[in-house]
Amino acid sequence: MSGRGAARAGASETEPRPPGPEAVEEARERLRGLVRETPVLTSFGLDTLAGARLFFKCENFQRVGAFKFRGAANTLWQLDRSRLRAGVATHSSGNHGAALALAARLRGVKAYVVMPEDAPEVKKAAVRGYGAEIRFCGRAIESRQETLDALVAETGCYPVHPYNDPRIVAGQGTVGLELLEQVPDLDVIVAPIGGGGLISGIALAAAERGVAVVGAEPSGADDAYRSLATGRLQGNRDPRTVADGLLAPIGPLTFAVIRSHVQEILTVGDEDIVRAMRLIWERLKVVAEPSAAVPLAAVLAHPDRFAGRRVGIVISGGNVDLDRLPWARR
Image (cartoon, rainbow, N blue to C red; front, side, top):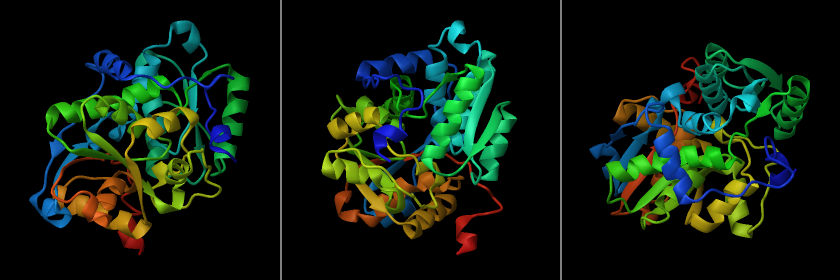
């Protein structure tokens, strides 16, 4: 299935246009008091391993334990009550679903989340805990979309796309604005890529500040890497990676921003991802999920690209099943 077909939830017949940097600035003002300004951590040991100066932006400390709350809140706070009357819905492997559920709860509306049956139990529990109703589907992106379409037809709820929406992208971009204010002399920011909402927003925030943006993607779900290399959207037929939060294919909107503003995309295998995840736990003393470890894995796997540079690394989330830690299964 093509990336365009896989990324249409919540989009109209005409694909939405990418936001500009000003939309990220507006989102920052809109989200004041709603989102947490997350800390930046450093580690001498990790700097030594990387041969670079690393600054870790800890979105695992964000509400719902992931950056996704920024985009969800930015979207719902721009919707009037008539749009919200029947509730909101999305598809998600976990973090975006939890984020939308919390944002909907704060706005006093119903939320539905379509989730793969094999999504991590900790993420299912989080979605339920914030009051959303889960509708299960198969793991393929086509199954997610079909289930969401049926749900919207049944309930009349408003579909919120996990990433191919300018409001989502702008909200996620506030991660980049904060990081650039906290560490103003960065050379490069490395962020994970799943659907592309986070890195697109960060790239827009960094576009006028002279800071390069590099994507990090699992080699088992490398559609963004292949799309950038070929100049055309490439789908993922059967993505397989320990980084469950990065299974979604990029969409037309996020791809447009990536092509214009992301310097390159680096891919890493699951062994490197698990090693980087464990290093974050051991050296930073914080919980990071596999998807959040992909940027560090990319920096460590490609040392020549970052040697001697000041590198911002986005730890995108910390929602992990503590009974199924990946290094315990290997």
